[in-house]
Amino acid sequence: MGFFSRLFEGNKKTKKSFAEKLKYVFTGNDIDADFYEELEFSLLSSDIGTNATSLIIDKLKDKIKEEKIKSTDKAKDALKEIMVSILENAEATKVKTPAVIMVVGVNGVGKTTAIGKISNKLTKEGKKVIIAAADTFRAAASSQLEVWAERAKVKIIKSSEGADPASVVFDAISSAKAKNADYLIIDTAGRLHNKANLMEELKKISRVVEREYPEAEYHKTIVCDATTGQNALSQVKFFNEAVELTDIIITKLDGTAKGGFLLSVASDFNLPIRLVGVGETLEDLIEFNAKEFVDSII
Image (cartoon, rainbow, N blue to C red; front, side, top):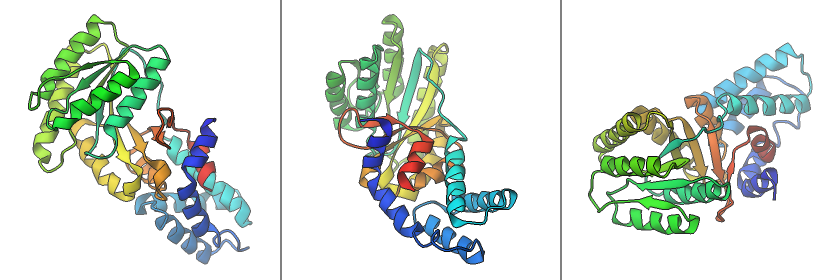
């Protein structure tokens, strides 16, 4: 099954939500104040935040004026083009190896599963992968990661519960260099009840990576659960302040009607969406394509 087919299947709930809300907006004949008001309401109620909605409406007004668009059908095409341009504004670049990918995010968003699926994908492509179990706070974290590492047939570097996460990363970097690994993927803690400690922990890990492995391309990737919708934006803000994120992975897109929040993430933070999860299988974490995403919801 191709990208569009899998995305379309996994995005049915968001499409249904969008279709229901936009149905009446584009059935009229006039592009007037009522049209824009109804469109604004539809976008906001589709989990597209206020900033992204305002940006979309402003761009649409400009486009309609510049291109002298008169029909709502043409306006709908223009809307799709604008959404694609917002999502493509910070398109993910191809990762160069050796690469370090530090994966961050709150507990429960699917970080461990995402790391397992990424590792599996990369090993199938013939890449050598090492995983660093740097979430030493949760007892179950490294054992869950071990299961995924075994499934993906990759090496895992871990330590005892309560160990310094930065020391685990230091050991993993040494191993990655010695084994000439293509990718080092770092799992991190996601607890938010003590934000100051977590922020310092992530900064310390980053310092170790930058000092010990300067030749590697360094990605700081946040995993967000699509079912949380707009609530994910505060998570992106927190982790971005801690480590200056480079890209985003969206999980559980198949389980929500809140896929519209991807436009908020892209417009508010100018961060590329690299991968999206549209199912439970190992192959259902797929590369994001802005045009096909918009086509799948409108």
